[in-house]
Amino acid sequence: MGIQVEFNPDLALRNFSECKNGNRKTDECIPEVLVIGQEYPFLKKGQRNYWLMGELPLLETKGNGVLSRPFASIIITECTHFLIDDIPWTKGKYKVVEVFKDQKIHFNGFAKI
Image 1: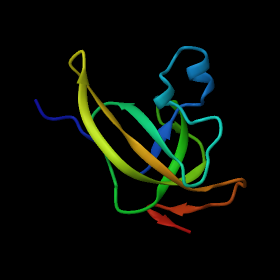
Image 2: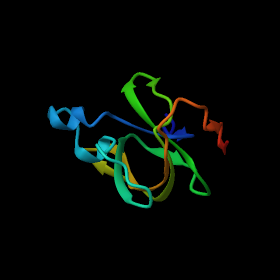
Image 3: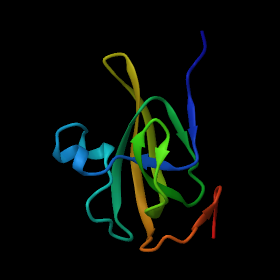
Image 4: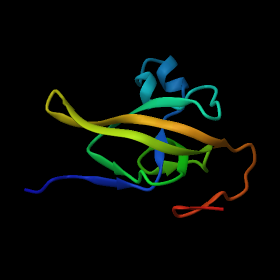
């Protein structure tokens, strides 16, 4: 038996409609409006590690590895692991650096283009 830890090169959250429909908590979803310079909380199931030393993409996930192109460039400012009913979760905060309004490629791995 090992320790299950996932390393994520991005922050992938659900569409805000999932919160409105009662399927997800607010912090599991991308806010309806992203404001540059604003900090937002996030919540992800599982013990996850994120890069804290620079910008990374904010994506929308539909689950099972189905991911969108980046919505924004963010910096994760805080990240904590904790348990809910003996299930590991990761919560934290991210700050919006840039919001993308086009379909251009903005990241190459961790490198912002």
